[in-house]
Image (tube, rainbow, N blue to C red; front, side, top):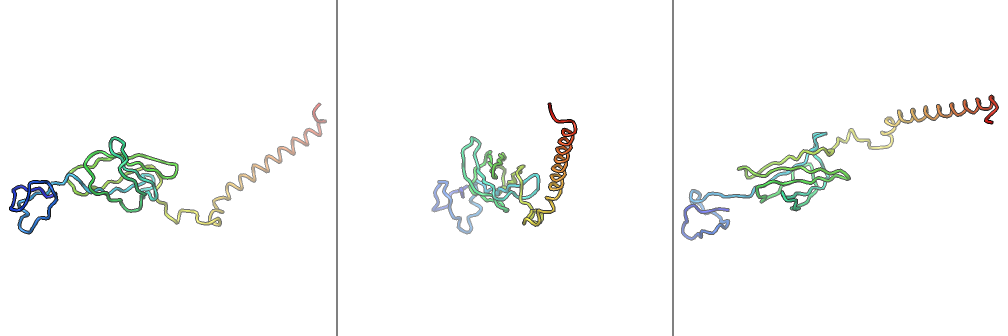
Length: 169
């Protein structure tokens, strides 16, 4: 809002946002108690953005103010009053809450909310098809086969031992 220092002709003393005509810039000061806030959510584990999480901005008292879904880029909120806030982050069955404060003299404040939730994973590290999963499956298959063979050998040995001794009496 433009708040007059001296009252030029044709202006009122009310604190109403007014377009300032050319030549009057030195007679006004800008008084802005609201700031724009860019909020981005990052995973502290993978140092990458958390994408697709449900976000809820809450006031200090826990009142829900707004909701959105996280993206790779920051989400801009405008006209945010200075104060303390909490950001509830829900991704699938996991959730986290990050506290932050809006304040200072900047008209745009950037908030990077750090969470333990997993971030975006590079596509090259993801298993895309069953054929790609096969090499990762081999160690488990070999261990399972060895365990089954060992159990069968013990069973056959015990059965043979029981037959030689004449069985249970």
